[in-house]
Image (tube, rainbow, N blue to C red):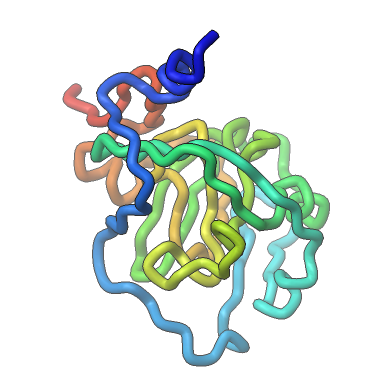
Length: 194
């Protein structure tokens, strides 16, 4: 198999490969002057709410993750290398109620996005702290960004502040504004026209 064939298998239909890292978001880029006030809250269908301070979150085990990312606006960036915290390491501190089936990610400025629980818990999903060996830039989600690489990149919430576990699915910000509820790039689930 040639290298070009391998790349074609990694790039979903309708996408173009970029070596840059385009910046797209709604609203202003949050700036954190005092990370002592940053928290990540976990709530909803859990036995007990959990809240991480910035200092506590930075003490969690870190790993390197490698993946391709695909934006709904048709760009794909291959061979990304991240440093972050595995979802499984966070979930060791959370006891889910059995009726939890979905996740709502809450970010700065009231921004949200939804995921099925199984996608959130995938081994490839993680909380990013660094990209390409450098701390996340503010426009890419500093201090913590969720990364769910098998879905379109809008599902990888920047500026993450809370994780809500739910029994039912509910559209987040972009989903309420016409984006697909799931967002599989290989099935071109960009928009929901139903």
